[in-house]
Image (spheres, rainbow, N blue to C red):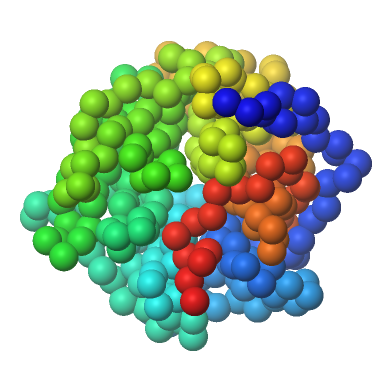
Length: 341
């Protein structure tokens, strides 16, 4: 394998730039070839940031939104909370709504409908992320079946799962996961990579022609260390898997040969340790959780490659009002919508 440039890469914090303003919970970001961005927004929709920096919010027509004057904590538990985003084949936006517990589809004027909010006759749970593959199948992660996701911040709860939505309907394809978060495919769509936030690790499954998952295995380290709450992941074109740790505010990479590299650590070690102690003792509270989060993107949540050459890294987060970005030494792996004509 050719030399991996990530091993010599260091982020120059002085060179980090910021795009967007007055955003609310920009957890997930989609990039388009023209340089534009679409960011999930807690006001009940998405913000479109044009290449020239101008922006507009598209609010879901059916969404009541939330009270932006409410407390910082309540904005993470109440109302509509667009979380994961994906483009459909025709450019509409799939929204996994962490607040209303459903998968939605919104056109670019805001008209919204619910695709589904139940599975196998039961409530679907906390819908976290959505991804479309090259065969137009939709993959959805459900973090937990608990009503309050804070109750799922324990080390021994494995009620998360992955569902696949295609012409045969929606089906659970992997169950028993620890706080299921983002999923991504490698370049050949041979494996589906899965974040287990409370498992502190990345898993992967082999994907067969029918879209069924097999041979679950840990990818990279068995555990990602102190403050190991991985959230978002994305591949670059070399095959490095980039990821974030949400409460400890770390940006990391797992190389194709399994090496684990921390690229950026913005967390407060003392506050992160307090959270770790509470987590392993089943006593995480709002107060302990919300004392974490600092740096350029507090509660660092996702990684998106964008810009016309896919060499700009954008970091989504849960508590920032803008989006930090910097240049990568390796362009990102194009998502399925990238080469759409």
